[in-house]
Image (cartoon, rainbow, N blue to C red; front, side):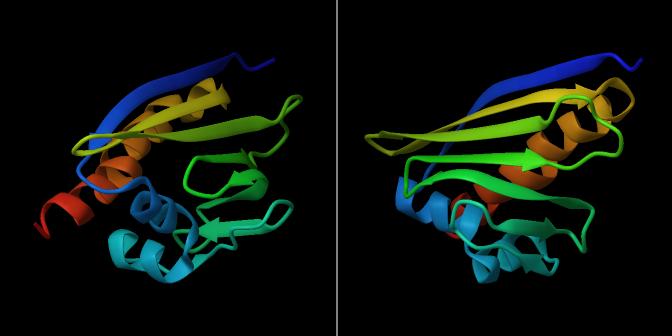
Length: 131
């Protein structure tokens, strides 16, 4: 049986929580920062696909401008892999709290780098390099 790992980190982004929420849930905004087609709907129970289906899953909980909880699909998992993104508004931007649980050990390094560089990192660059 495969061991599971978790990722948790915070990333400060110089943008309003509402702007970051759109970058997480609006397919047009996602395509702008990810440079890839996206299927996304900011409604609970809807399925999504990012990066041409490299990442897919279901939105479990959506609280506008505050929180997004998703199940990410991996093959043959006994327990679901859950992503929770919370947005904490601050004076000059937003602290993004990411918690991804139940990641297959063989996918951990790739997913950890993906979050920091290509997902949350890309959103940070999208907002801060436009300034």
